[in-house]
Amino acid sequence: MANAKLEAVPSVDIEEGVFKYVLIKIKDKGTCDDAASFKTIVRGYKDCQWHSDIFERINASCQIMGLEAEVLGGGKIEHDPSAKKIKVYGQSQGYGKADHEETKKILLSQYPNYTIQIAD
Image (cartoon, rainbow, N blue to C red; front, side, top):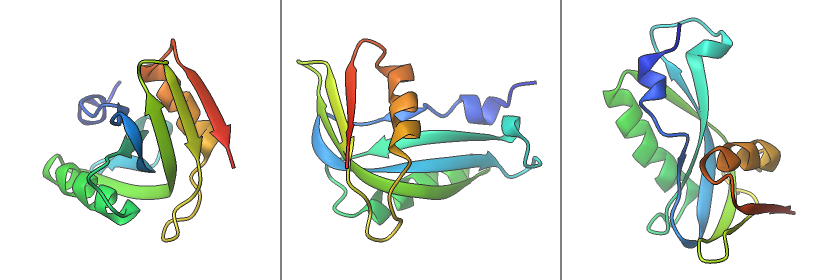
């Protein structure tokens, strides 16, 4: 059975341009640790100066929904909608490097017609 709380959270929320991002695991507080009880999401916003700013924003909204959030790592994203290109690279000093392959997989679910490049 699917978890309605997790399904209500979009897998991707990013902007246009260059910005920091975090890979976040969200979990329903009322469930065990099986695969159906969590979801990995990508978040990135230009108005957030630090990776922790992004996490604080997401964590606050998750708590309202009865979800727990955990940062899996961070990096940067360059998003060019006109060229249908996304570049994922870098790392967070505070959270470490996100799994950019996992990030790419999640981004492709939202942007299937994009070219998504990973660079280190």
